[in-house]
Amino acid sequence: MRRATDRIEALLRLVLLALLVIGGPVAGTYAGQTACASGMQSARAQSMAWHRVPGLILRVKPIAMLRQHPARTGPATLSVRWTPQGSPRSGEMVGRADAAPGHGGGIDKAGRLNAPPLSLIR
Image (cartoon, rainbow, N blue to C red; front, side, top):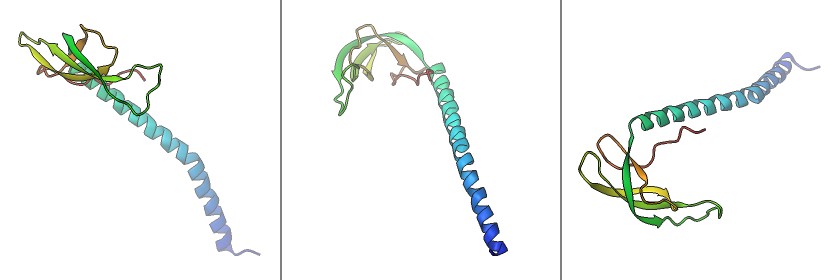
């Protein structure tokens, strides 16, 4: 016969295994939902701090990529000029390689050109 401590140890192993099998996916799902909610909150905050102004793309320089899908347009560095509140400014931003002149650029409230805000699309 087995000792009582052996039976308790076997029972504890089963309980721990059940906790790992059930608790792992639950914890992973919770972590994913929390990360998604945090990202959406950041996207909303960034889009609230921005406003669009008309800009003129002066130059498009494609960015070399190690691997790029042939059906997709790759990223590019765009040299842009815009006029927020009467004072002309210029700068560079990352955009698509197929960007066309007249593209509206995103700026912050101080009139500085920045990368586009996070997308609210899931």
